Image (cartoon, rainbow, N blue to C red; front, top):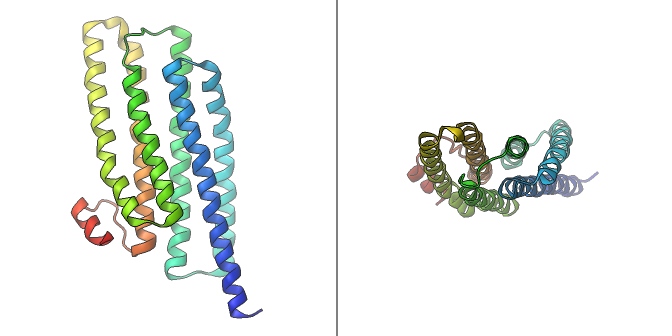
Amino acid sequence: MSDKHMSTQFDAELSGISNRVLEMGGVVESQVAQALHALTHFSGETAEQVLKTEERVNQMEVEIDRELSAIIARRQPTARDLRLLIAVSKSIANLERAGDEAARIARVVQRLISVGVSTRMPVSDIGFAGELAIALLRKSLDAFARLDTARALEVLKQDDQIDQEFEGLLRKLITFMMEDPRTISASIDLVFVAKAVERVGDHAKNVAEAIIYVVKGTDVRHASMADVENVVR
């Protein structure tokens, strides 16, 4: 087999596994959106669907990880190809964890439905934060598809907005608990939901950092925003 043919075949394998990551990302994005729909509409049926999707996400992670290991063993990649495969591994782990957060939200929804919750609770605020997290996840997947470091940088910058939303929600829920002790249990549940939304944003950020690592060869985890901007330039 010629070197050119082997190179073409390897490129096809890299493209194939990258497409599997994007497929998994699409499923997780939909799962998070369903979890937020279940919350804002108090839909037990939708919450149950989210939990069923969790099994599919877990299976996809296992399958991609197995394929990834086979490619590394067979091809022994170096340089950027190796970085891409490492990024695939990190990305599917973060996508699986984002799916876990969606499942966590769904379980809280089921509990809130079973005990009843006041319509005064700031569920719509959490829904808004959730939309930001979904948009961030979508943008990180788009950056992965294009290996676009500029778009990945946008994800890193916008993650702060979700953190700010979480802090605002936390203050609002504390106020609810102080004003009406009967809301304490539901408020604590919603704190966990808000934290799950924030973590979805964190996982999108982690995918974006992996993209910058692939393209630039620099690990930007824990780096300041100014340093990341210098790397991307």
